[in-house]
Image 1 (cartoon, helix red, strand yellow):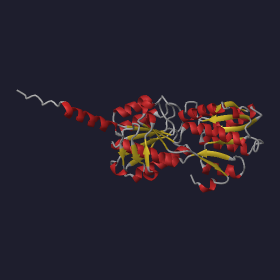
Image 2 (cartoon, one colour; image 1 turned 30 degrees about the vertical axis):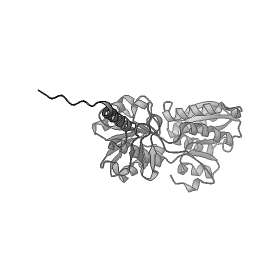
Image 3 (cartoon, one colour; image 1 turned 60 degrees about the horizontal axis):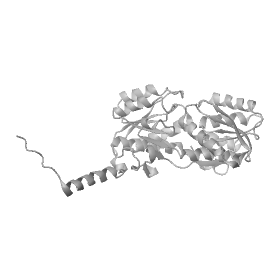
Image 4 (tube, rainbow, N blue to C red; image 1 turned 135 degrees about the horizontal axis):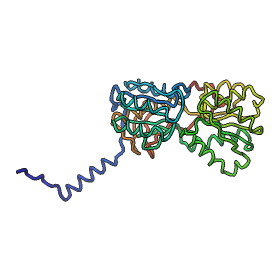
Length: 341
């Protein structure tokens, strides 16, 4: 006969349960030394040829090299809602340790990312999130509310707090764009913006030529337009390029989110007075470290977990698995030459 296990009772049982419960509630804190070597981490941008995405992906690849892993970038040439699906399936087959994705659509890729996670692939979204059940961590460039409200505040300064303005967004399904626009609209409800009017939200689909044509259409449709906010690096550059050679130069203010290198000429020639952004290279770098820590098992992505992110220092996972890079910088003629990205 088998002897029954000796049961644990009384104080001993209570102590054991308390110890287990306490251990489960203690947030994980990881250092770079805890990372596995030779991790395979793939970056999947919205578009493979998007200048902003290239900078972000390069930052991620630099981090992966720094930690002794194997990095790669794959992705579509268009920003369609389902254009990333085939790449996710391929990366699963290749048995990547982690996928870092800037999602073109909040929901279209979720079933495939769930499949990846079910097979042990860790998933990090960055720049543009999916629904929360499609990933373990979202690395956000900055607080979404702060970005959206900040764009309206900057436009208000540029046009003197009154007049018509438009938004030139990326794709209609872009999670990040839509979130920022929601907060722009919230900011506009404040009484100090009562003389400002949002007349149109246009979509350039993160395509240079379409964004250029959409800018032309906005100026034709709204002859009293005083400003355009384009919270996409492709859109702001295309809008500035159109206005720089049109009669609207000096009359219509262009702002939004762009990189210093692509916008420097427009600042210098007076087409654009100010715009904002964070360092996309650092965004990719942080996302790579988040992915590596997940794949190494040093964190799980729950709120309170913290990890070493190389040169960016220790970072902590917040609510809903969000890790925030930091606040955006406002670039103008006084500081743009201090930045090179």
